[in-house]
Length: 500
Image 1 (cartoon, rainbow, N blue to C red):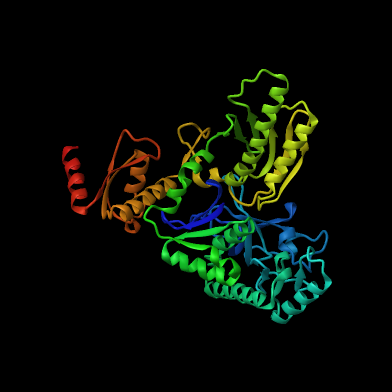
Image 2: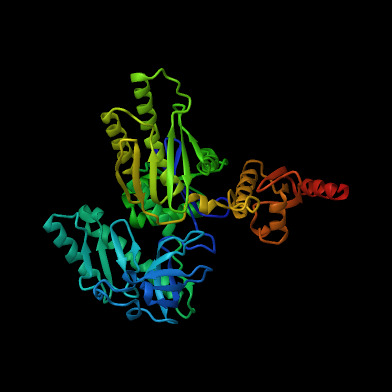
């Protein structure tokens, strides 16, 4: 059973897709210093570089966004060989949308062709580059001419000057009421966001707060999610309103998680995320896969592990079984870890061509559920598979971890913000389950220094915190010594302060 979970426990919006108890995908709201794919900004052109046909756009972060000439030109106004200087000038303000998130080494990539995606429609606002000569574009996959004409006529009647729309494949069977409702919703969201930035100086972000939820619901429901479980009453109402506008037929799948134990704790999400940050992933049959990432590509090695067969046909069958199991897990790990770019998979060598073909088809089949485009190029006689996966956002490791200062970049450790988010989540659970109003917590040197500098805002915590440093704790570790009454937590804290 596939389940989508949405929670803001820990102080951050987080969305998970589970399949038979396994975490398939993990999406989180960007930090204040990050730009997510799909985010829209009113930026300022910092530099135009005709030599590489690109411009650098200040969107308010340390990294300037990268705009290539093909993404700067209007659809109807693009001319072959025309310079980037014909479309943008240094110092001017420009509306842009992130199409590829930045990494630790690369800037985010943006387009001037701004759009808002729905399930049935894609709205092209007049404030962007417009829709081109044909304001209504119908998906090529809708081949029925009567359906194409019906959709074109209806959407043309709804457009105002400068607006455009892309009619998605899912709209083929939609009725007029569904299309009108989603169109009104997308246009209304855009106008509210655009109005909010009027009078502000660039750079600034357009406040489209529900975009993460919209995108996740669109992808997860299309992937066959059978339930959408939401934690927190206010968030439940927000998701319900959104689904009513864009996914009305899916509303019966919506559930409110009212239990005291946090939703993601029930699902074991934290433990599965920890495993997804490890180099080696165990397989149920005793084998494992090893994932190594470099700047240029990702290499995945499949190992038999515990197998100790006698050879011959017995070995061939066991190797094929291990490779088939690995194919499913590789597809899940690529999606969960958000690995993009070039990927090489080294399956265990199989002697028979029919077995290599079985494994190759199993991998292709497992990858079909991935909402990110994946291209599998083939398998060599040695069992090597070459593929590419489009990179649209930072990997899971880049989002959750940072380079370790003690090993010169060779290792990574959980980000401090993530450590405090886990602590906040644990305390929220204690506040619910034990009705705790205060807690005494020990922090490692690294976390305590962050706390002392005021970077972990105590006003938003679910309980009153009494904090002390523990020399024996390392890295991002913490320890909750007591959770209960404020009087007892304060007594324990003062007692330690006197004895230290």
